[in-house]
Image (cartoon, rainbow over all chains, first blue to last red):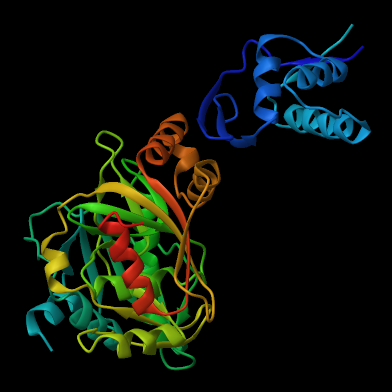
Length: 93
Length: 298
């Protein structure tokens, strides 16, 4: 199963106001804006490698009621975007 | 015409202080002489031995171009960073060129593309893309009790977080020129350049008292994203600070140069300031809202 995580060498700085957070990637020098629930997902990926299923389970724990195919697709799109931005890496095996 | 100013401009260069910068301007072009006389006569002059940060000149090219479709050339430290523009746009070219000089060569500050006004040294930052009505709003407010720090460059000191004024003439475009001319009889407007890339352009003189306060820094207190909307009532609404962060950062000249420092400074700015979106159509209504903002009634 494919899992994803923020690599140890990636240093991120965060500043949040309400449901908005900006994130500075010290490696690329880019700043990104995230809103919930994406902020919580990224926080989790900083702590551990997670699959799409793990993320869905996490969101359910957080109180998201209906995890359907559309939500799964949005998570996959989000992960692809984080990969493109060099924020996360795919963990094989 | 002020003979000293004109003589210096045409010879060794007019040396003046603009905010934290020392500038030498050289030109023999009539429209530049007139514009400088109208809009720059109040800036403190510098002595010949003073260090100059920016040496700029506006010149006419040699040869046929002096007569056939005449042009103006902008020089910075003897180099030409831009292609020539029509002679009729020479003064506006000077203004645009000097903006570029300041914005590209002052990395001791974090610089946003934004107007800044203040009262009691509490500053409102007005970041906005072209066409948003930022300069018109700024021009109206500085004729109704607000002090101009800049129409184009919000320069924040990384050590103090304070905004350093660089009060230069306010750039007005198209209908805004007459709007401001009619808004206040004291408004002094310089040479008008037609058919520029931005349409008709003219610059509004900075009131004398604001030049005398050009060393007085101000504390960022509000960030307001303005937008001119025809027929709209003047309306101020809270803006998400994350969204404002990105708006401001996208309008920074040297965010990527300063890297993590710029990120921290912009985040500190969001922590410290109230953030709003502002739509308006009439200047008088806008002034009332800004007065309420200052008085804490918003």
